[in-house]
Image (cartoon, rainbow, N blue to C red; front, side):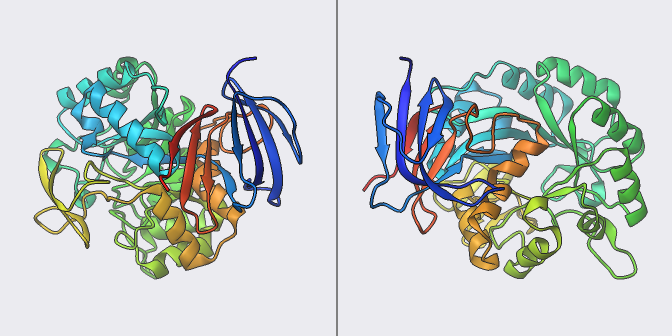
Length: 387
């Protein structure tokens, strides 16, 4: 018998089926059996009797820069491990380490560091890299340093994939910049998830980009040409296209609660991916922090640069899920879609994002108020809420 875990008397929630009370038997990080009542012997037991616990697939954060005082751009193994360790506290079992616009040598140093990273036993799994910049619109730079924004280069990207050992899974691009459309088409052919973001594209340019392979939109509403009834822009374009899923920062700072509701009404749960876009101040006290060499002031009103621009968030996935439920009254199944299943689908992860036999044993155990009680990565309890 290998590393085994038996979870009993929990409500199992997937995105595409009615929640049901059941038991799970896990061995060596994989779900072996699911039934209404299991009697298998295991090395570890979790019994949800009288707890009304909900078992969901572990949250996946596709867009996160930093946490707990550390950032992907630090380019150190310590920072990546500390980030991965901190994320399990909020129910995250998988994430894309997200880069930002910087000088080419700086970015390349980050890729070399990411290529060497191996997830530790107590950590959320790094599923790959999300490259946010430097192929963006200077008109929609936001917190991305304008001086380092450059035009897309397939040759350069090929080199980056080599440096990262092919760990780049998602790339945020402004399609309207010179060379943008050819770049999107090539990345799509290579199987990289292309996301439109930091873009001033017209509706016509958005539609062309989608035809060429764009399947996602980076932090909906933020740093993209807004909707106008005579010029629908990026927001209108991605709202209308079912082939495109939208990242949503449900912190009520990046998007008003009613804007979150609007996205839910238009895209539905199948079209939304909850993200945090968090920076290193997540989980820490209010104050001043660094983001790509820029000072970010973090307070109750969010994380801002000195010019007032938003600079990431301090949102947790736990709070994002609660906020989404609060403003939309969506179902538990829809929460699973938005917090894990859609991300797994976009990243073509065949054994992640649902609770089923043969799938990875990556879960988050919640109480009725959606508070994280335990996080389980690869069949091992890596976080327990203190009583």
